[in-house]
Image 1 (cartoon, rainbow, N blue to C red):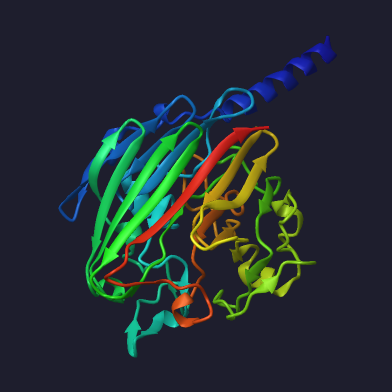
Image 2 (cartoon, rainbow, N blue to C red):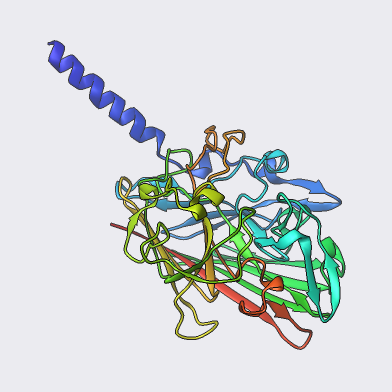
Length: 375
């Protein structure tokens, strides 16, 4: 009798844990919690949905709030970290959850660059450097809705000349669209003055579900032979380095946690992974495969394709548990990761890096696709 009782206890515990990981934002996201006004502009929550995906987005920072897929148990699973209200986003310790990043994603050394002989000064918001467009970057802007239907939303933003120190009036158009089992993110931009531009999405993922624990068992593969090593402030040294025989070799699938605590200087500088990987490309600006991530317990696989030349892999090294997500779970150290498609960090100060300048006669275009499947 005692053995049978123990079996029931074990089964009950398993079911409790399993059910606790069933996630569906229809149960936790209230649209009214996203309907407010910031600096005279209205915010809201929008749902894109088909038979395979549900994506909730808000025009505050043009953010992905939630991304729901089906796992191998045919359960809904929310794999993007987010919050239950605009207020939670406004007070979050980590300001970039799910956001569109601009005018320049990643770091610019000491917030300074030269363009056509003129020096531009940007606000410092990451140690001694400028990060993700500054404290009032695109992640803090209210985007205008151009169109919205069941599977597609188009937003726009005007970034004024001099905003956060950047030159030129920049007009940006962003499209989120779901097609079958994939989320497509496309950017288009024009300017009236030459300016650096580097746009990305900063979603934090856990393919076992938001708040489900460590990402160390996630299996990562990167289509990259080189990365850009950094100094102690995470600014690129200006060189590219082979990933061979280093913790940065993800050309064959391996667990994220397998070498995340290496004594390699680069790992020490980042407190883990927070590095730019140069993608293997046969031609510039073509859409090509960048990364694959697989979580074995829930069977969810994510493939990323992009027109960008690089991708930033960040392993959640600075998450401290102070933020609480939409399911009531604290966002803890190394329980999420970001894969940010991008141009290289600090490119305005490195002439050997791919061009990041947009001129008035040009149109900036960038596309990244996130494709989901099961194994």
